[in-house]
Length: 431
Image (cartoon, rainbow, N blue to C red):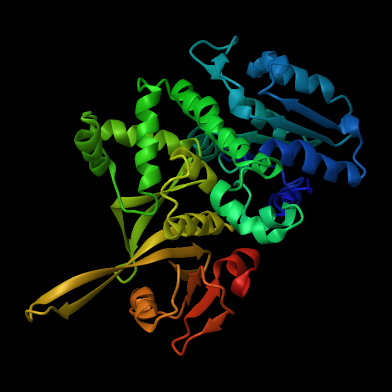
């Protein structure tokens, strides 16, 4: 198997080196965080002339290191290895969320957790701290409060198509079909048969994600209910929905009554475990958000496909999910766009119609409007896809990404058209 390079994330770590902050790599379990920290970044440090005894690595997910899940034990051990004040040390802690808060032995009604330990270590002038974690709520909450600007968050995703393509063995002509079907979890690329890939992805759900979410959040839900909920989201990927609609589906199809609030909590747990992502609707002309309904996308399309046993393989929805993940991995905030316009209907009455832009993506002062389409080979089909884009009166770049094998081109209104593989493998307009 070819080496999988994660240069996007390695470069972020390099740029943040020695900045006095705790570097926190977050993302769904099995997306490659441990490999990035303990193999790729470790190799980089060695190549920079850092000796092995300057690098302290602990895998907190390994039972052999169970004692260090106690923050006091961890702190004592790490400080015992920092022996020379004139030597630069690098601390690499994998799966930091395994470290649980314990009572402070010196102060009643106080607790000590991993944030206290990391903040203490980062204050040492000769220590650079890097950690990975698989729970967004816990880490983001701690970064926003306890770290108070002293932690840098590095979101990590499963393989994007360019990473997958570069590591794909030999015949690249099958790479898109494989990625489209099995997604970008790194281990998948090393498996050969459909049965092996399907089993691996299904096992991730049952053994890692579902069970882990139930344990982490002490959910009263049974496995079957959570699986049914994920099946509903899988079938509706890229479609507008909300907890009320999902609860109605359970009521009508499963004859099971679940409160909206319960559905909402389960969905929040999936998002916090990085299994799902959300996209809110944004009124482009009104410049305001519409919180419900919204869209859910799977962090990895292969997990979505495996969840429904590789049925319902609609190309338009899968393309849309892959594009969403690509844009998030490129560091954009991603919303679903709404364009409203007033016109007279067939009866001559004034009506307001809403059109959708698949993605409104922002980073700093940059904005792009992106539409996902299978084809625009017919003029009527092209007009349907760009109707919403044509009604946006600002000057930001508008792009239509299509499945068709086309050469990139731009129409007379400045809308760009590009094949999806070309879009994923290049940085159009420096996106």
